[in-house]
Image (cartoon, rainbow, N blue to C red; front, top):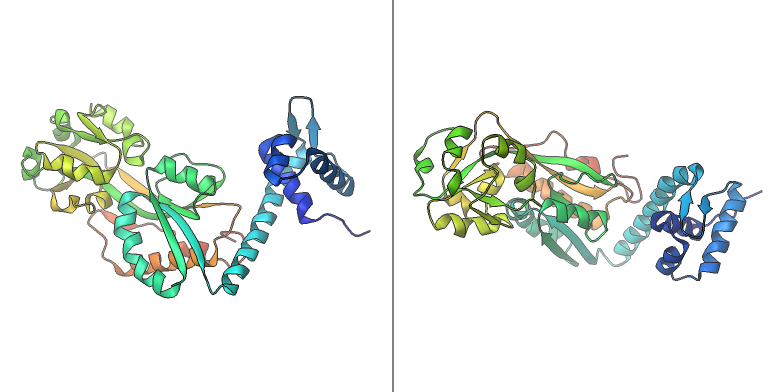
Length: 327
């Protein structure tokens, strides 16, 4: 006997599994709760297994439901991507693309890639959000943007992280600062001697949090001043008598490249930057076109000192419409 399972059954199941509530799932799907319950019952009847344990207060997934959840979400994501790509073709690649990027990646990589992308997709509009790693990961996870370019901070299970660039930490300082006269690598003890001059970045950035243990080790965890993003650093350092610990790519953007930069010695620290995508959804054709443009810039532009490409490349995400990322 042929199965009667349809996409509406899978959408209803995934909505209940995601929300843990028939009431909230019905609201998400714009259905009555009785209609949703009937659809779930039809699905359970067809597959011959119970999917939810229901009480007056909670809905719990059975082992069979947990197994089905990821697969069903993937099927729906692939179907939606196919429809999206077909619509894009019908509209001659019209539409709107949304991405989020760390400020240094936006300035050094995204902006130079825009002319090529706009030439390939002239009818596509683009929104770019910059922010700290925590904000960008959340935007990708929640589907607010098509992909992100940032560090791996929260490490969500629902996201894929493809390594893009690696850059080394060093010190940027005001031209009048004593460390500006140093040549070559700086030792952490040399920097800690000027800890009262340190300007820090907020903890929702990878720069501000991941290397915190090293800063504490050298008594550099307390900042004289703190800013929320790297573009704010240049006017602060221009005041004089200040320094900041930064990765090399950041030090080469936002006018900071005009200030002295000295790499830090042992322990040598590196930041990794990633392409961040949702692992249940393949990239659209327009998103892939922007990634192609980004790769073109990365392949031809000279990297700043202390920056190197990661071993993995965006080619891992060159997928056919509707295929799973990395397949």
